[in-house]
Image (tube, rainbow, N blue to C red; front, side, top):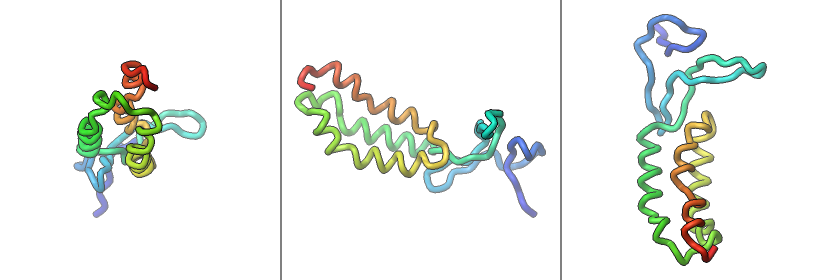
Length: 116
């Protein structure tokens, strides 16, 4: 017997509401058709555990304490990691990654440091 997860096309009572696999949480999310109509679809997005891990990693970088760094230094140090996260986790539902990039706040750092 096939078990489906509930979305706009499957309105029945299904036991699986969401599950996590390889850093993605598969659950009902809003989607938009090419014509602009909104509907609910069962889509993967970055999981809470993966988001927590990324925020912890950003905190460990101690960005506010890097007062002598330039934007070039930041690019050299963090570009590969941030680009890797973006390429992996945003392939299905990119808006789920927005919070991570708000957490990596270079504008706040730049306002605090006049050496930029």
